[in-house]
Length: 63
Image 1: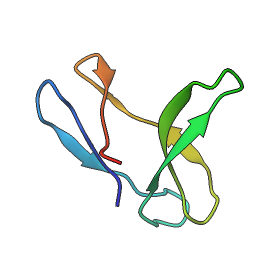
Image 2: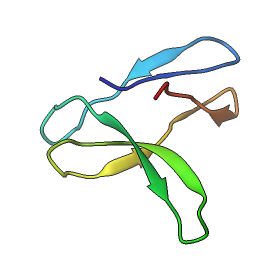
Image 3: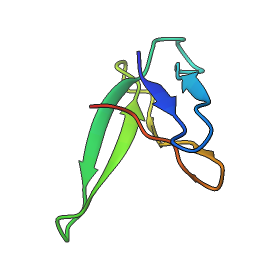
Image 4: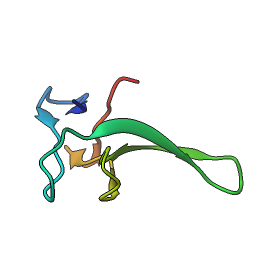
């Protein structure tokens, strides 16, 4: 299961799909310019999300 954690305050969350309740898996999207962004995706292809925010910054997930 994907767990995001805030580097500032230590809060963490586990992410599941709201459609099928499957634990989201960690993934990376790569843009046309070569940049990448960390996302979590549903293993059953119901979509994906960018990392949540806490303390005004993206929460991190260990790959």
